[in-house]
Length: 182
Image (cartoon, rainbow, N blue to C red; front, side):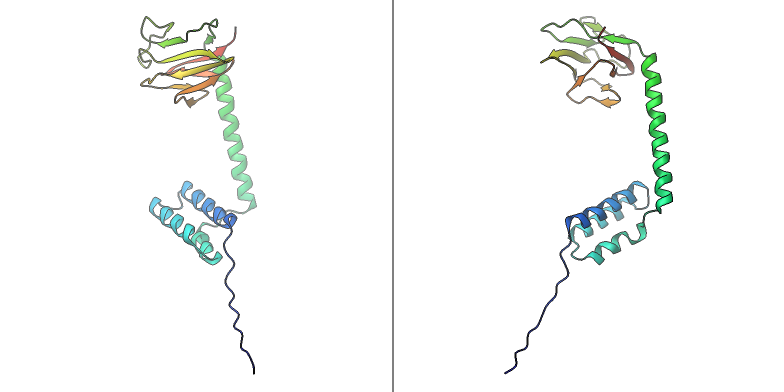
């Protein structure tokens, strides 16, 4: 009596790393304008349900990355752009007026256009009650109070509150300052 055995071989399960790599290539392709938004969304959906490596490979076949020389060139250009931005901010920081931290009190320093504020800024882009600065647990905290034109710290918009330090660039609307301890 002979027995017949069938061996079924199934393709190996996709790893999360493979799927993540393909999703990254798709995101990069969309960021570079190689994919329309609809194409990007459809390919992302297909990548998430793909079962085999060849299905993933088909999704990125037309998005082959550049060679090593092109990657280096893009890296250098990115570094040069980042340097020029850091240089611009440093130049701007030295030219900005200083905003001294107040003497510590239990009450926050209110900042805005209203004359009742501790720091009055008479500028159209500053709200009447724009922000407040307070000392909490040894850290200075800047809180935006729902201003129209926003509060930023080092170029990033404050949503809620942000810890600030000596040398930080802060702006209230279009009025910018460099924080200083004394």
